[in-house]
Image: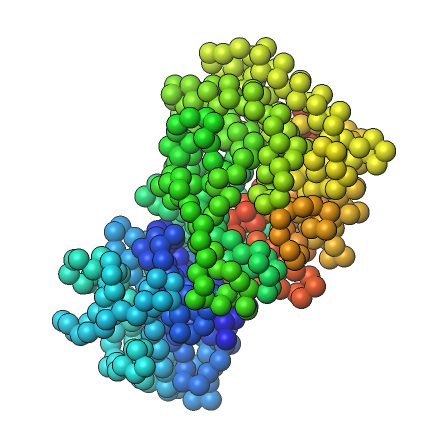
Length: 595
């Protein structure tokens, strides 16, 4: 049976990533890109859909595991009656070739080991043709080819490659699985020891550039390492998660493909990276964003593919039973076709932050921003699907209006600050119009809180962004009232925050969901900004305690069952962890809001 979502660790090569269960099973891997079809898909089906396990014969979960230092090299240790053994898993950062390296190292005694490799391409449906050549086992199906090189004999049984071997103290046995296109000769696998050394040096050097030196350095650095692992190096795009269809509600239908790049994450991602010393990654992310959104402003999408692809057609894989029977398993994401007006504010805020942090400005980028603003000027007052991509009727979501205000605010300020061409009074007028509209239609004076959408009393955790983005100052009574209302209505007993109450919001889907971890970090920021620093710190540390033993977070946490839910690991959980950690290092109550 597939382990819990939080039982997994991630390894990756900056093109794709694999999930490794604590029992030594790789049960999710897409090759050669994050959004390619999986060759190991037992995470969303069963053993028949592909996996690779290396562990002591007859053993269960490892007794201990960790990342080697500040790297993405994952190590599992089993203590058996006959001795102890370690399995080291890694994927060397790719320059074109994609290798999964697994090194078995004897620590003490003598341990019998078993490797079981079941390759199933096309998300577990296609069985490759396996044959031996030049000392390797090669599997081919359609466009994909893999070559397995290992130090011990193998045998085939039930369309699966097995190996039984023994390791003693000080002995190492290596396995390398290399992917390549099937029309070329089989890829020559990497040298395992050299791959280990170069991979350790790469990640250690990268981690050494982190400039954060606050009290939560380990959590911040692991989150930054995770964001780097979710980066598609050729373009600079950062995927929301390396997985699809891990459920927000176990056994339910809230299962989505997150292997794409969301614009909603952009501003906070850039801020987290550049504040932590990673200006190269921030620039690459900014440049990916500019390329992706090129074209007509009216056609701006909320998400794109790794290279900026626009067509992310959604369909279902009916041969996969889903994680713990959570169906359907979806590939692609129809939300890419939704209208979400907040993305204009997120894009323009990202570009503003890039200029503020000293990333080189470019004339054509400002020209593009002007065109975005001209479109938004006539579009901000439309109803949309909102930040959470609801599949119900369009509404006038307050968050979308607030982010439209952000777009006008940042544009007016930049014209004046940097002497850029434009009409600051035009955008100041638009800013004032949006502000008045939100205060008139999106604020409930009887309850002293902003609401999720115009004319509807439901609350939304996205409203916590109001003081964070500067729509109103943190000490405004309406801000404090909204934060208090969200605590009262959307906070669970655990202190974690729901995005919204599904029974109060028509999102077009049955079932419920867990607490959204990004929203909980937003509450941490809102509490701190409104002068409740100690409460903010307690909540922050509580969320840190929910990370798995490797420091990783999924999209949500369900306190009803005490488990992580949603895709994993989730960029939008780790990004606000970093920004909240920075904020908590500041003096209590020092906000960033602007009236």
